[in-house]
Image 1 (cartoon, rainbow, N blue to C red):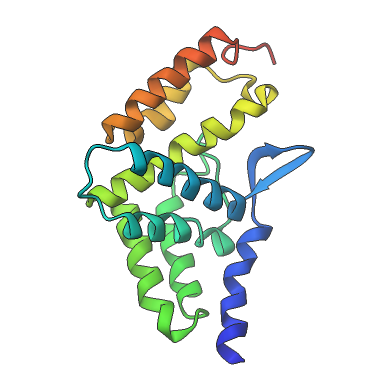
Image 2: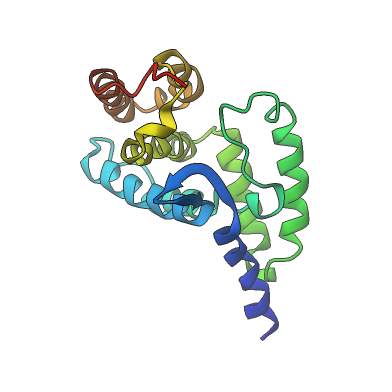
Length: 188
């Protein structure tokens, strides 16, 4: 029972609110993690590079926001709050790691480090999926785009997405769509 109780710590990701909307509430980080898995599965299915480790991508995305249980979510456009994000999240993950079942401690830590360092093609792909997911999600919530410009989206999301050509192509189509449909430069 002790390990089952420790596993419940992961369930706290359901309580972490993101800046993105879902109906009349905010999306949880757990919901975001789920949608990144769906999005990754789609893009991996149509990707020409079949040498990417699908399971590794799924694991990276499944655990990528677990650190937010302790550190909270900091939206990408909150630049001032993001200045110490890496150090805060590293300490938060060290603390969380000790609360997880023994069989998972090192695995979750290693996935956290791999995702943050983005040195593997799986981590680059997972990070690009993380970035584009919020944009695709927010297509249903045009009002949330108020104050956003194409340049902001390019600056905040573009560098990670452009690491993966297939996702860069989708990103460019998304930007074009958002321009045509009036998502950008809405008055506040």
